[in-house]
Image 1 (cartoon, rainbow, N blue to C red):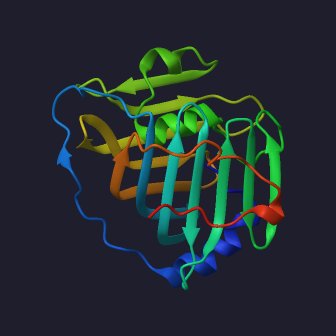
Image 2 (image 1 turned 120 degrees about the vertical axis):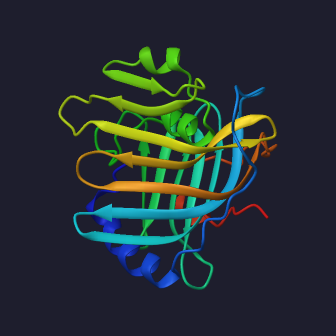
Image 3 (image 1 turned 135 degrees about the horizontal axis):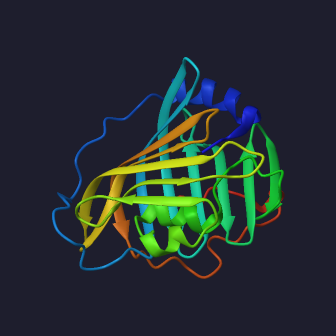
Length: 221
């Protein structure tokens, strides 16, 4: 998952200042087949970014709702939202270093190699094998319990996408990956959940991508 060169400085400064909270086990380790699927998730965790020899970690809130809405907030040292990446399924907003960019999904200028539906599926653990195989250049690998463990997709003219999922926990009957790693050949991003709740009833319009002046923290207590 590439955050682009413009996001590297803010992660370098803020994540190193914020530090890394210890990742503690949450929920029971997922053993058999899940009895339900997560359509939304509300989670807290740790974000780790790597590029060449650089590595930084920081606290984050991850919110997502199928089919393509999500919100990832990375916090600064005083609890403020330092970096925000949000999608309402049609538009993508990236706010970093005081600058806000809004893209329509499908725009070649988007600095990421995943699409909205893929992102939500990875964050909730809901991506099924038949869905990945339907995407051009995509290949999925399932573990012995039928859960997605690795996903790759070739992208013409750009580095390919590779996502690995693991440390599945049983949350309200669903198997949720507590470790999600994105790579695109240039840099990587790993999300480790410390706690999670699935099928959270987000209010209508919660994920709406608004004008930059109207953006504010939407952390859910």
